[in-house]
Image (cartoon, rainbow, N blue to C red; front, top):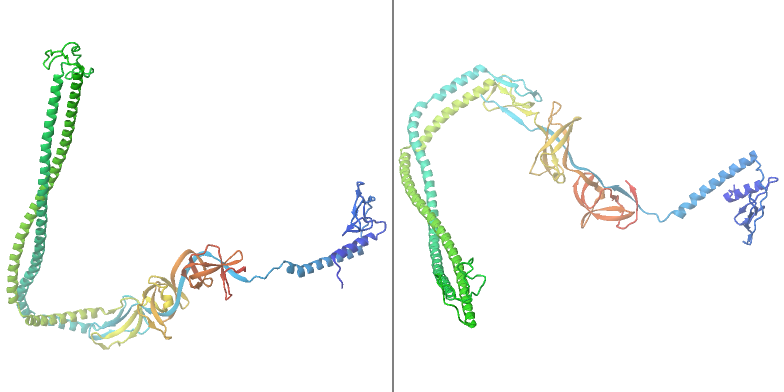
Length: 630
């Protein structure tokens, strides 16, 4: 069946309507002028169209619009069918053509995973046999007959249970025999030993005192050496300070002489100035503002035409000298005053130097006094140390004499050893026998709750002292011993928690020991034994049963992490491939803790980065890819 195009269907439908009687169509379609083309619109305006030549022509006036004739039922069916066929054709064409028009180069697809935050936990899994940390073999404390014992291998016992009893009458006989044995030979031994003990006591005392005295002598000799050094040291300081003090005192004396000379100079200058001022007293003052140097507030007599007064108030002859002489006198006065000022300044300077020299002498004198005091103190302590040293040496010689005499009065080592050994044997045998009997009276009591693992005794039969009776393994202190390879060993350490599973039950545990000796397993691989203690054992724990162990290793909380398979290793270290804007980017990373599935990223990646699962695919930096979430 031929499928008409949507445009053809549209034209057919249009032609069908045009065939209706009395209906006139005015259409423009793809530049072809159809019947009724041009005309006027409803408002009477002219419409324009294009003919075959493309020239614009005036549109004909549109005739009045006629009422549409309704489609027949058959026409409606045909119309609906055509529409459906047209839609199907468009869909088919779109499916066949559009992918080819729109599709570019096909890009390789890579599986990516987001960098997320979470916890990385290392887990070490293994298995081992449940065993007891404590296993005790019970031995008979006494040689006697067993009165009662009904233990069998596999029985459970509780702490404090009486596991075995002895014949009580037989135990009483053994105790009496030990008592009598202990008293034999005691009296003769005591007499010999008492005298010898006195000598030994004196010997021991003198030996002890000698040790103390020898230490005191050594310490005092060290102190004497130290004090001698200090005396020599401070003697040298005394000599040095003496020289320094003498030098500073000499400087002070020289400055004091300069001070006297400066004082004399000042006094002479003042006297010369005063003499000049008295000599010029009858002349006109050179400084009208100060007519009387000795009394600045006095107005003074008028000395313009008459004479002045001398120093005692007597009138002086009038000054009839000429002006040149007055100028010379004034210069002499200024020179005299300058000399006074210079002399005063020199005196002030030397006074300061004298004061400083006195202060230096005082400081040095104080230091000299301090040195003398220290030297005197060390000399006194040296004398006292020498006296103590003499006393210690005297006492040491005395104690050595006592030590020698008490040692000579002692029994020989062999004789005393023989006496002591015999007595010790008697006492020891008696004591041991009585202790054994006392233990036998109490029977054999379970030290802890556990399981009987072996039985060597028969009820009613004899046992020898020290003979093995039975063995009990604790079911309160139980553990699982597992083998750890070198790959897991670096993840384990004592104190880590663990989960133990056996017989369908789960228990918590703690790693209590890592062996420091590696052993080869049945495959020849070196392994280290790790002991995991079960923290909460109960009656459902069976010794000798195999258990699975999962140890929680190191943990990193709330860190950036990626799947293990996304981390690659190169010559420069670890790196990941990341998809950024459809491009493969290689990023070097610093990894931290790693579990079986995830790796901690310390640096190099950011939260939300898209890391690539290579999956055996060859990936190169700069590739364009299509990222697919894995």
